[in-house]
Length: 223
Image 1 (cartoon, rainbow, N blue to C red):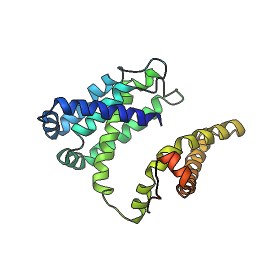
Image 2: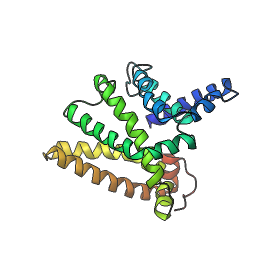
Image 3: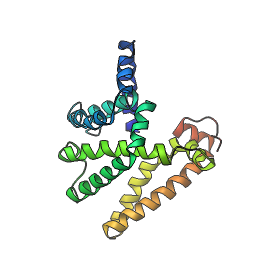
Image 4: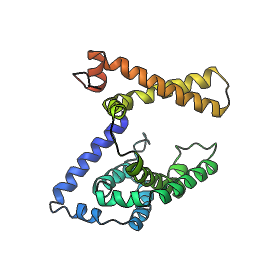
């Protein structure tokens, strides 16, 4: 749940900025962002990966988390910007795919949570292009609702809370108890985490006290 703390801190920072920017200048500028500027945002994103990192608990990479949070509010929240991403979705998707392959090859076997990986230009460019590609492709192919999506939306916070401890415990069990090839470990971890998260969420959502303690929900969410 550490990331919820990041979102909370980012929200407080946003409220402060909105208080100072009463004329909504930043929102107006964000609406005018074109595809070229969207690409160029990679530079400040890369720079933000170097700042406001807590010295002991390094997962709190405040600079890049808060900057992306604010970028989402002031720029990516506009329909005009999303339509541009939708227009260039194929190109963005191809670039993101190429970057992903390059990233995987270049850093294969490396500890990807080290600063030299997280702060590299390749990592941050891949990060940003993939975000733009996902938003653009989603506008075209995932912009719909139905019974299945409504059901999973009602469970989204439960999945968010439960998936990580399940993933960590499953990974520890697989690595310490078996000696499968790496690719098999990844596939088993993916399948097991998805299934266990789904079933654990369904169980906990049906237990009023546990549901409230874990998710803060007093009533069962309708599916």
